[in-house]
Length: 140
Image 1 (cartoon, rainbow, N blue to C red):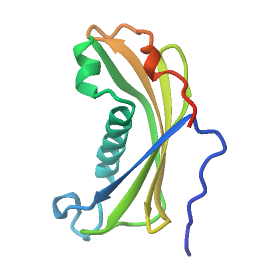
Image 2: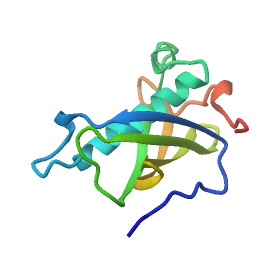
Image 3: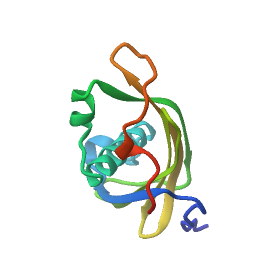
Image 4: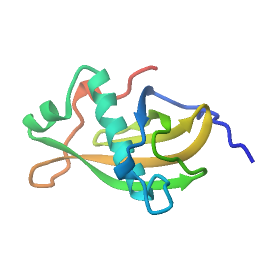
């Protein structure tokens, strides 16, 4: 059964990167370990910020942090060592202090996994903060 990718209807901003599955990311069955999907999604968010002209390091230097408050993953297919995957990270909603993302991890347009996350903007003490203007709603 083939699961092909269909993008969501509402996307504010999206960014795509390629990731090659490394041997150390696989489990005893030779498949990409489920925990590493979360690392990939974090990489997608980080590179999406970079594509907007900022780095997460700069974000932290300004005294702000983006913390994951919710994440869910649906695993559709396995991936193996040396597979070249495409990760699409989509910002689907921003509020004063939160960002919602959707993710699609694909191999040759075959859906490997999808995910949704919510991140909150906080200061170093964990107090909610307003998102910087450059990170709020943008058109794709």
